[in-house]
Image (tube, rainbow, N blue to C red; front, side):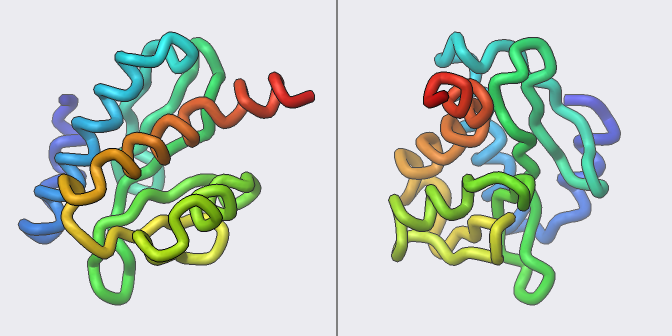
Length: 134
């Protein structure tokens, strides 16, 4: 992990940081297991760790952060996508939602690992799925 990204994780509260690092591991594993996603770029967007698919352009940006009000771990996506609506439809009660951009954890990542991995795959294949459906 690059130093600037490591430093961005260090700014989160201890419990939130641990949850986000667990989600980061899931992001890396999902990308590695899915040929459509290809190589990920780990960078900072708005000062938070973000994951892009620059070579395949298969997905939308996935940013890991926390809610402003109560510092809960969250996955953020481009608000111009339909991703949060898709996730809300699939998992109406497992997560909380911030408008059209945020999926907020209600429980520990390991308790919803399967759902998180599915969400990560949806985000990182968003453009590829849209192309296939045309």
